[in-house]
Length: 203
Length: 107
Image 1 (cartoon, rainbow over the protein chains, first blue to last red):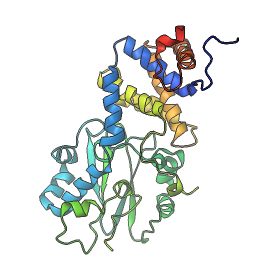
Image 2 (image 1 turned 180 degrees about the vertical axis):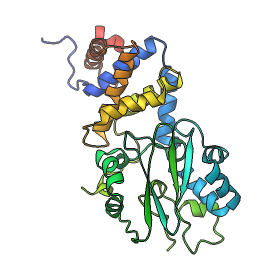
Image 3 (image 1 turned 90 degrees about the vertical axis):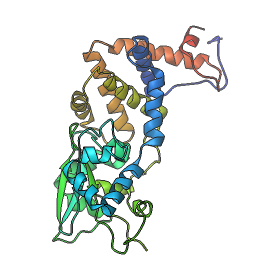
Image 4 (image 1 turned 90 degrees about the horizontal axis):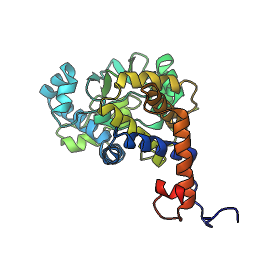
């Protein structure tokens, strides 16, 4: 008998799973991390924090000129006042789209991203293709997302760093006068706050 | 390649280990064992040459964390590999459907 504990449905760990468990075991044994804290971090970013937060910031900026001014001057404080603060949101800048300027955010180094307002980045944001091409040929990238900007609209690309994270404030769609903030927030996608889309136009 | 055609899973993590290696890194940073700027520099280097923002991205993340821990004298490759083998042995010794405990590696 080759193995004392053979089972018909033998468990086999993916090599990365085994390697990660080994790292966690080492860090836990040394008292460097608390497994409960690790669980809490996963729960936060897998389930709790996401682009709904950013959409509420955008909707308020559309609806409240004083807040929009504050957001333009000190985005970190304005966003924190809505309860969205913490990791990777310590230094925020809001960049406002206008009739003549469209903003696009990338992280060419890795995947720096404003977690408190957008959660963790989508796969395409982390892809080598996006990270390289967003700076070199932003209009071509935007066209691939279905966004065809008029030539007279300038595109400004913001390269995120570990020190500075950007939130795009899209333009408020026409025909939304008097809408509630919740209804406005529903028009704001994650892509609109990265700059690969515009706010949805109400049908 | 059309960037917007990349599948968009609801969860940022496709596999449990990706979530754990992410959270271990955040926990180490929060406990003050390394600065996020230092992390970003090492991680950025590991991302060079990756092909996608999914599995490749997380393998680069894990390799960067191991490098940070090695630099700090907290872990080393041989130690991690040996412990990973014990986790594999524990998995083989654990009946399907039950939680895998490292103690099972010795059974």
